Image (cartoon, rainbow, N blue to C red; front, side):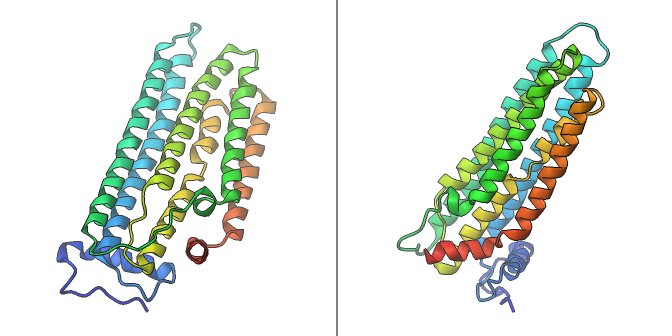
Length: 270
């Protein structure tokens, strides 16, 4: 059973975060570890950053749909201004994601500076340990499938479909850049740990964050929102097949791959 935090060492203001940290430790079978303020603070900032990142992706989907509606909603002429606005919005989202990553990194740096001691030889897991080859292959495959749908729509003679495909391409490239930025942050920021337990927790957080990045929500939703029912029938069939196959692969991947705690312990053993 997870040990409760000591009331004389943990600030009352962090009681809720400490309780959530205790539950997080129990879910990952780290029952001998204490829910320290260090872990509680790092988990709390990651929850908020993850929520903000999801909002950024939702804004991207909505903005792409609005761009398609305002630019090509039955109008005979092509207007590039909404496309330029969407491109500028994507650039702004990249900046927002960069600021989010910097915020998380700054919290980790403050936490590391406050440690009384640190592990003597901290590990720095690479992409094979943090993400893993199966998840990397899945992420590349879903991106390639979505780009193939956008490219095939560009080859359709209908100018409306081609113009909507441009919106789709901008959205896909934007979410790919955001994901790459987040993954780079995961792989480059230093480990913050003072003992073996906190080091294991650090690796678990990295693995969880990396797996969260492979969720292709935008790759699944944007083609259906922008082009389904507008593009030719063969394209709609291909889009549905892509959605079903990638969803089945996603479910199988999560069912077959070991939990993040198991991956972290393997990294520690190596």
